[in-house]
Amino acid sequence: MVVKNPQFEISAVNPKQYPKNKLPEIVLVGKSNVGKSSFINTMINRKKLVRTSSEPGKTRQINFYNIDNTFYFVDLPGYGYSKMSKKEQEQVGIFIEDYLFHRKEISLIIFLIDIRHEPTENDKLMYNYIISSGLPFIILANKADKIAITKVDDTVKKLQKSINPIGDITTLPFSSERKIYKEEVWNVILRHLGQS
Ligand SMILES: Nc1nc2c(ncn2[C@@H]2O[C@H](COP(=O)(O)OP(=O)(O)OP(=O)(O)O)[C@@H](O)[C@H]2O)c(=O)[nH]1
Ligand SMILES: [Mg+2]
Image (cartoon, helix red, strand yellow):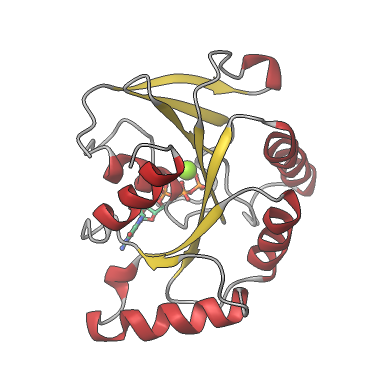
């Protein structure tokens, strides 16, 4: 997939600001610092279209990136960022849930977890939430560059067993650092957009 003209469109702080053109949306979900914003840059071959940070809690709004007028990548704030006040965490949580539950344009959720760790309690809550929403999703075990390449496949299998024991949800490794598994993920995205 060659992306020609990705554009930042809007950083929404309330639903009235969401785009109105009905393009399908591919949404990034996951705990703070897992690499959601970096994922978008990697997929579109841009270093800095989406702001990333080694400090968790970088993304606080719902950011829409218009990809060649074909679809949006939607970058959500991460959950589980302990430095945010309880009240702020709650507000961000309600904002995310409201978007996920009501937004008709969502065509795929990309749920990122960290390949190095067992899924957190919040990851499991989010998993259950996505399941209950009935929306299509895939799981990506991100930061695959952080473990030995020979261990990647087994680790992904173990993670899937832990979070999705039935094994019915596509679960793939990913790494923004090494830019590996990009094509596999593009294939899934294009399938969900009805383009392949
Ligand atoms: N090694 C490695 N580091 C990564 C990878 N993806 C992201 N990072 C790093 O992880 C940190 C967080 O990345 P972000 O993309 O800002 O994470 P985020 O999920 O958007 O975080 P919030 O906006 O706080 O929710 C940055 O320092 C990135 O460079 C990856 O695949 N491998
Ligand atoms: Mg972010």
